[in-house]
Every structure is written in structure tokens, then in C-alpha cells.
Amino acid sequence: MCDYANLVKTLHQFAEKAKDKPLTVGEALDSLDEAGYAFICIILVLPFLQPIPLGPFTVLGGVAFATLGWQLLHGHESPVLPKQILAIEFNESTWRMLVKVCLEILGLCRKISKPRYPFIAEGVRGQKIGGFILLAAGGLMAIPFGVLPFNNFLPGLAILFYCIGELEDDGLMYLIAFFWLIVTVIYFSAFFFALWYFGEKALAFFKIF
Image (tube, rainbow, N blue to C red; front, side, top):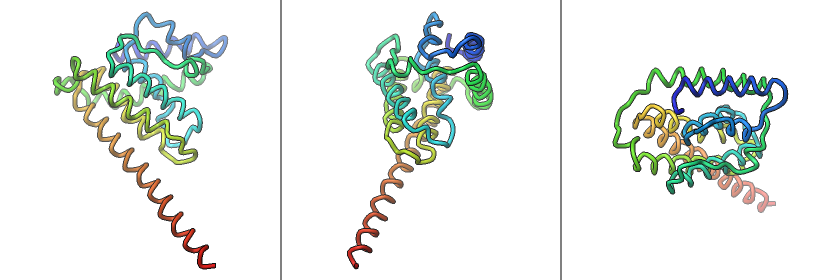
């Protein structure tokens, strides 16, 4: 089930099913006979791969990815999503848009990904590393930043590259996922530092008066 052809085919099927009425995430995933963590995560992360903050939806998505990461880290074979995520509805046009985005992103990633560094991606070690990436990226995404640009995009990239690495058995993609986790931490830390620094300056300014 975890390959590019099946992924794109599945998204097209979701769009067809959403013609009559909006299709929930839960209904979409229920239609799959079997799906691994990477397969589910790569579908769920697509809406977050944009610089515009999605508000509470970003927090909810972060909780979902962190939950999946915790499950993967602890060796759960079947991923289980929170009910709030399963209840989210997408109409036909949204599913079509996800198919388009998926094709563009995965088409680019396939050009640079291939099986390599199997000691990172395969077996229990790969499972543990993948679980940590999802847990960390989900936790970062769940921080309620409000209108901060890229607060869903940067951790979303970490999730995306983990998924590519899992689908292609590519350990290098796991390392790139870690790179985006580090970039996210630096970006968020800089934001918090700026809040603290300019907050201190503002307080000092007003104390003068």
C-alpha cells in the first residue's frame, strides 16, 4: 500500500467519493484496507505545506501527528487518529487540490530519493527514528503561535521528508527531516527571543515615563 502509485490513486478515489457530499478524513481512511504511518501522514500533511498559518487547525494537526509519532515510537502496528481529525470534512475540490499538490511535491522528491543508508530507515531503528520525527514535528506544530508565518510549513516539511524516506527506504530523507526539525526549533526560538527582547525594551521605555 505504501508506494507513490497507490498514494495518488487513493487520493483520486477520495475525490470521486466526495462528489456527492464532503468526505471526512475518517471515512477516507476507513476505505483503505491497510495503511502505514507514512501513507496516512503524507496525506494529512499536504494541507499544512503552505506558509499561511491555519490557526486552530494547525494545533489540531500537530496533536494528530504527535499522537501518531507516539504510537509509532511505541510499536503500535495500526495508527489511530484523534476523533477531531477523523471528523474533518473535505469537499471534492479540496481533494482534487490535494492530488495536484501531492503530484507536484512527490514528483520532485522522487527525483532526489532512492534506497540508501538502510541502517537509518529500516527495521526497529527506522521505526523509532520515524516515531521521534513525527512526535517532535507534531509537538512543534501544535504550539499555538497564531499568525506566525511558516508555523505549520516548517514542521510539515520534516514530516514530509520522513514520509518520503519511509516510502523509499531512504535514510538521507530521514536526515533531511531532522534538518527541518532543527530549522523549526531555531525559527521558533528566534521568535520567542524577539518577543522577550522587544518586550523588555518596551517595558523599559514606559518606565522612563
